[in-house]
Length: 295
Image (tube, rainbow, N blue to C red; front, side):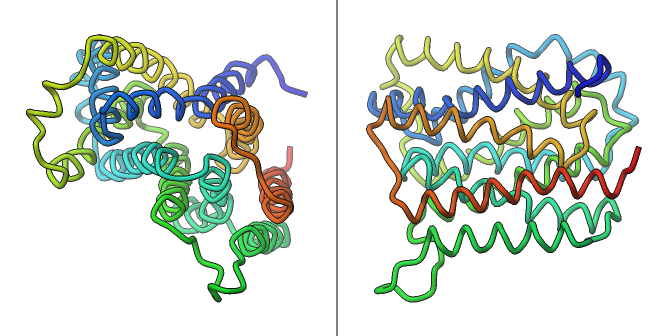
C-alpha cells in the first residue's frame, strides 16, 4: 500500500503516463497541418522552457551543482522525448510503444553500471521475458532475424533506451533538484531537434507556414509538458528506477485505448502475446527492486 510519503511521487508518475499515452495524437494533428514532427517537438518543448522560465533564478543559484550527470541527463531525456514522438508519428502506436517498453532491460543494465545494482534471478527473468516478447512481436518468417522492421520501430526501441537511462541518471543524481532535471529534459529535447530541422531544410519557410491554431495547440502542449516534467522528475527522484518503470505501464493502457479509438489501430495475436511478456517483465522489475532493497 502506498504511504503518505510516496503518494505524491506515484501520482506524478501516473500523470506522466497518462500524458504520454495520449500525446502522440496532438502531434499527429500538427503533422496533418503541415507541421513536421521535429519542428512540432522542438517548438512545444521550447514553449515548455518558456513556461518554466520562473525556475531560472533557482538554476543560477544551483550552478555549482551542475556536472557531467546533467549533460548525460540532457542527452538521454532529449532523445527519449524526441525519439518517442518521431516513432509515434511514423509507425503504429502500440508496436512503437511496446518496443519503447523494453526499458526494463536497459534499466537493469544502466542501474548495474551507474547504481551498482547487481543482477539477480529477477533480473535474468526480466531480460528473458522482455526479449522473448520482442522476438514474438517482431518475428516475420519471410524477413528472417526478428529485428525492428522500420525506422519508427528503431526510434521506439532507442527512445526506450534513453528513457531508461534518464530514469537511472535522475535517481543517481540526488544532488540535482527537480527544477534542474526538468529544465534538462526541455533543453535536451530542443537541442536534439536542431539536427533534424537542419536536415529537413527550409526552417524559415516551415515556421512561416505554421497556422495560428497550430501555434495555439503547441502552446497548450508546452504548458502540459512543463507541468508533467516537474511531476515526472519528482516521481523518478523519489521512486526507485525499477519501480518507476512499473508505474509507467499505465501508459500502455491509455495508449492502447487511444490508438483504437482515435487512430483505428488494433494488434494481432502475436503482438498481444509479446505485449503480455513485456508487461510481465516490467511487473517483475518491481520484485527486483524489492529483493535488492528489503524493508
